[in-house]
Length: 517
Image 1 (cartoon, rainbow, N blue to C red):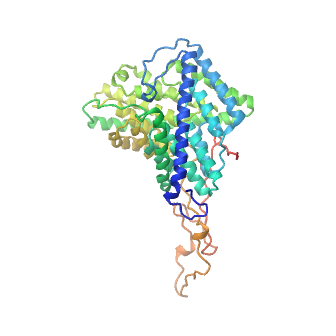
Image 2: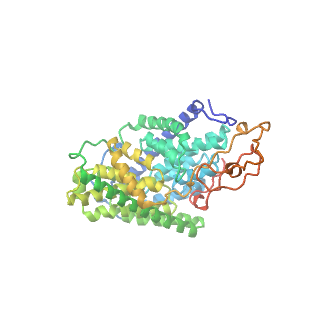
Image 3: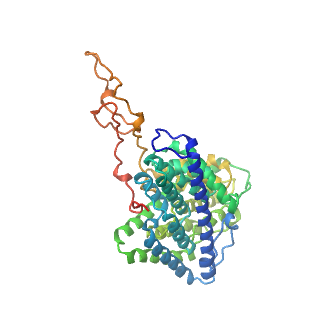
């Protein structure tokens, strides 16, 4: 029923049971996070602060944005939620602070069986309090860390090998993200891409698909199977030459927005990690940041909370056409600042989802500017969706998974073609910028299992005296394109380890190593 730690290969049949178990728990974790976040938003942000944010179709549909009934209470509620969430996390599981996806990536590379089980509960409560009170953050980070922690616990309790434990953690991450966004295929692809900057682990994809589909089914059983951002009919006669030119420009703008988002977040995060050391300071920093975010959220829509409802609202032609251009420009900039303050200061939340909000705002701005020049034939929906993918995919080093996830969120696969164009243009701008600093450059070559090594009885190849020794017999050439590591001095049966991880691929301070239960 479970993979054997001594096996040299892992057939999919041995992973069906653990993948289904991890997927079901990931779906239940996403259900709990979605429900608790909705409860905190209603009680704290709406009832106490009198602020009604935009909602997605999964949450009941977009709303008309109205001013807060008690604007003075919005910053205070945001600060109170940050105070409770940070103190709770520091007390029980400090590793639950910050954005959870990078912590899960660091655990996958360093100690895949070492994530503590209590992280699931602490991350759930802390994230719901932070985001539900008005902090700017995403739900995918908490969902990823919750389900990845459960995969790590399963691996530890069943005695899996290090390689198998990494697989269990990754499929948990994929199932959690796929469930919360109701995008199982995108979640599975994301799990295969997210650990590496310039590589992917395709072997994990079938197991991640099983887990992601199980999580999606569990989440859909509670909240339905409609796309997160709703279903949208055709808006306009279709794509023309002007649309594709504007899509390319949208990709370039989203690439710049992705670089700005990443640079701003790490400017705040690294400074906070360097200067905030004591426990009182670690609590005070997110509280002070929440006060600023609360004030900013009163001025620009979409800053408070996840901002996912704003993404759906921006797909409406009449709404976008009626917004001032300066406000459309302020939406992505304000979301960048709000997320950097909330999560970069130590608050609990994701940075994956807010980057999609930044891309959606940039796409809507590009459509609005193109509309003044009579370039687009379609409405703002394609520009919002490709903006989401082009802003996040290149900086997360997961362009395929993010693009598929964005189209799943609106149930429109026809946007894959324009999305590819936008992502390629954005990648030309982002370069080597990465949102997750715990990612390794490439997947290291696997060391042979004991059963797969060459037996001593195997005769060594003989060479004639006048035949020069081939270079391939003297120099080990890694399969991932790394430079040669020098002459092979050991016997032929000795496994050769891969190249060392470069310093830039080491885990960031936001992702500390996790202790065992």
